[in-house]
Image (tube, rainbow, N blue to C red):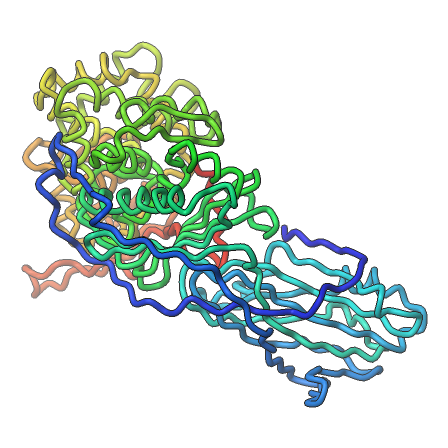
Length: 632
């Protein structure tokens, strides 16, 4: 539900607007990892390898916004206003605003109502005026939404018994790229039909006191920042903090092989209303521009003054920048083999791994929600003490596990870095059977079925977690890759409580944040054909391995097992026979065309557009994307 404010008072002085940050071309490319990536060695990034530039934003006159309507409004070119006389229905006024990356703007409508004959205009305008903003990425009327933080203010100085003057204002931050956005001012429920109404609209600045900075690393990657710089900070302290960010993105690029051209970071403060989530990030439709928003509950300048002066590195910044270096924009083995929940599973592990990969960052302590954590050595485990969000407890279980693993032997961090680089393995039926037997023998919960104290590896999240555990086990010198070692690893290193907690806590949403796939595509060739049930039989017999996604598709009835019965049900679909099994996630089973009799070697036709719908982590709103959960 949108938040709106109605304030009685005097309108502020003349509206003014800032200059915009110029458009900067950007691209996402793969880069070769350094000699330190995937090893216990740390890269060194000296001050001379980075450049830092900062400038205060300057302001110019306000920009008028042209409006239009389908009927009844007339434009007064001398006054620059749009008028609709008494007796005419007040149709919506439409317009378009243009913004650039890191713009802080105020959109203001000035509304003058005359001949209202004593009508309570305050009540009507507060309940009957609506500003709508259109998100162009969706392409339907459902993307017209009222923005957060809409403010309605009456100018008591200009208002009298015959004339009422109001402003409708929206402060916003365009934090990820150049955009043209449609706007619409609506008069609801036939409001003010019996009054004369005039409207004007301007776009002005909201960035007074902010500083714009750039830091460029040796690869040419740039971080662009907009922040309210505290007067308590020296230029040297601020520049050193900027270089810390530069080192961090260089190290992230090193351990992932992903190289950006531009990253935009916008620091918000309480004077500009934003959603309650602490942090947020978004990419444009091409996946090339990356914008990150950092929002703190306390005064931003004081918060950053403390962390910069005390040489802390902020967890929220680490977390959000790390998202930009995930594989969500580029389908790879690493994502399909290990990750889950739209990157929430590994984002913090990736960030801490990047910090330990840079010698200049290793000594820095992290800070989360005002709580000072350890440096990279135990930051993953100590983070749970600063954020006890119950919904994320299973994610902290994973952080504890990686913390213990990284510090248990000399090559621990090197193994974790290899995961981030994309090294992966497929699952065997023996690995799945070992995990199932571990649950059955645990004595604390049963396998399969539903209800309390049950566990089933029937979601992507569960299967990918099992797969990453097996990878960690295989690369640990005290365990290894055989199934007896994996059974011991699950018992002594992981534990049934952690396993069941992680696999069950997000059971209802486990597949919402995932890549689209064709139903029952077991072998990963993007079609459902006769090869898929055969792949199920071969996997169940131990003849082949599959990706976790393949195992998920192979488990036709979602009972947590992969057997010949799953293959039988798939074959019934292909031959058009009736079957009783339910399609995963409540979807109807795809209709499969029968194979022509004279086409023995042709694959059966794939299902028609039967893909698992997904919710991507970006592009929900043109300026502000509501967060899945408060970032940790």
